[in-house]
Image 1: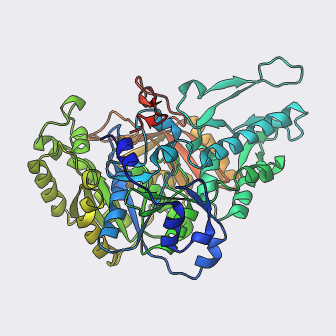
Image 2 (image 1 turned 120 degrees about the vertical axis):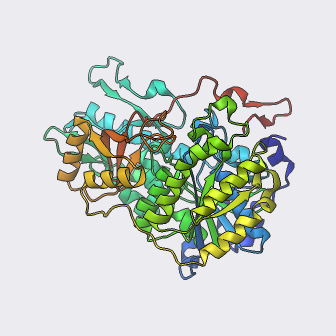
Image 3 (image 1 turned 180 degrees about the vertical axis):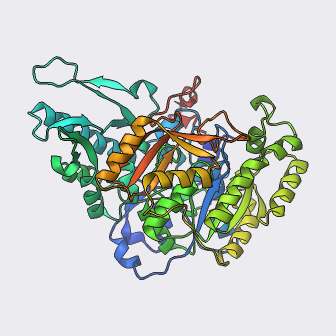
Amino acid sequence: MTDIEIAKSVELKEINDIAKDLEIEEFIEPYGKYKAKISEKLDEKLKEKENGKLILVTAISPTPLGEGKTTVSIAVADGLRKIGKKSILALREPSLGPVFGIKGGATGGGYVQVAPMEDINLHFTGDIHAMTSANNLLSAIIDNHIYFGNELKFKKVVWKRCVDLNDRQLRKVNTGLSGESKIVPREDGFDITVASEIMAVVCLSKNIFDLKENLSKILVGYNEDDKPIYVKDLKAEGAMAVLLKDAIKPNLVQTLEHTPAIIHGGPFANIAHGCNSIIATKTALKLADYTVTEAGFGADLGAEKFLDIKCKRTGLKPDAVVLVATIKALKYHGGVPKEDIQKENVEAIEKGLSNIYKHIENLKDNFGVNVVVALNKYNTDTDAEIEFLKEKIEEKGVEFSVVEGWAKGGNGAIDIAEKLVSLCDKESTLNYTYDLEDDIKTKIQKVCTKIYGAKDVEYAEEALKTIDKIEKIGYGKFPVCIAKTQYSFSDDPKNLECKEDFNIHVRDVVLKSGAGFIVVLAGNIMTMPGLPKVPAAESIDIDENGEIVGIF
């Protein structure tokens, strides 16, 4: 059966029953039978409760179809329940871009899914639409202000519009071409919504009032004296906060095995900070003994940002980290062509080991966290390949577990669940990659050399000018959020093996003063993706019974 057929074959519990399991039924706002918002009033009830254990799921560098972090995250949470532990998931919301693009849905797969999967993958509770509206309201207010006389003396607008779809045509556009007498044409562009600063602000705010304050700090442009202009100068933060008043509340759903799941926020980790919301994670930690969360793409991206941005801001620390690997990804990074990736090839796995070894080094030695490697098993993996990988990982002093959640549900993750319970009881540290007092270039240098293994960093002239400007206006102490390809430790998606010395090439830098970090654009990374030649949208449809089909 397909993922969507499996999801539809399972009878879900009503969301009130899931809330009762967590003892929060009076604090939810149902969105139909199987989804709900969690009220901000729950904070008062939970503030004295101790946090449970935090398990972060990350991965090695992926193939274009991903390595199954969400699938493994769900399997781990279900597996913990199978061994009698009270667990909960804290995941990100899917973006419509990948759903209709190359990756398809992002709700797990097989017998480990969050549900209702069609709703979650599509409009869900409208959070990302609300963020799109807030973002574009601000754009409209900026251009309206310029139209009616430009009292703030805008010379340069740095704020972009957004839409939650992959559309390369919108990366750079000209606006204001109607020819009206006072309209001012200008060059603009679109980001995908999950790369919008609005997404980051929602995910990194503590409550609606903190959200409003952070919105007010967003930099939107510079005036004729090259001084910054902020949202608060346009008096736009109130209206934007109103659009986001429900979007800031976390969403409660369930897995196919009825494990509670809080799904909230959806920033990509290759172009944004890659973690679900602070509110969702902190709420989950109060509601269960074990919270399983994930960070996007490989550990060089999502985990680095989770640890250096989210953990530093909140004071949280993972008790254990799951590093997801697949045999096919190791072959991919060992140079095997896509058409041969399913053939047994232990030699190719050995060539790809440098990738997983670097991720282990980063997590275990650089960050100092407790690590277990989870092999997300495919039916094409052979016993010889699995045994070879197990030996190599254990030689590094790291535990190894085969996860078969896709085929067996929580029963396929009992081994890793037991290992994680033990691992979470061990002492661990959290060493950050850089100090916030470091200057911007030093922070970038440390991430690129320590985490990516780069020899050096090269800067475009425009990037150097922007770094200088950011430091002059007082934001040099912000953390850095590096946007680069997810397929390689380098900024070249074709340099999979990274055998030779490489440099990271910084072409631009963008201040996110509301979110509280600096985005560093490396290589040819785009904040508005494009669709592949054959997008997943071609397979998505409604059948003769009115049922959605084709989401995978």
